[in-house]
Length: 127
Image (cartoon, rainbow, N blue to C red; front, top):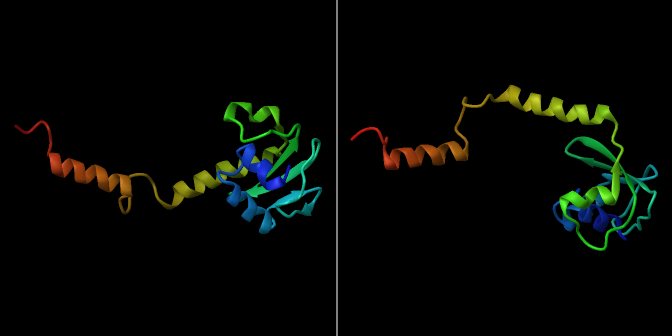
């Protein structure tokens, strides 16, 4: 199975074209080599994927026939990502909160829609 198809099948990427682009950009490695999207994947391969500023490391256990449900992903791979890499994810979340706290700054699209609905319908307690 192709590496881009495998990453799509086990839900590391939302679409196969995004997986292909990641391979072409050099964000996918097998045995510390940058791979093309057409590279074949076999059981026991260790794949390193850089996604959202985090380096994920997964080991292939088996090859699925097609895209699998989220609950079945663990049958086909083992996530062996080092703990330090996963801690970076928490740091990224905290750094995003630092720049704009919820409720401050310019309203988001959802905030704006809620405000529009409120002004359209008016407060319910005034009658």
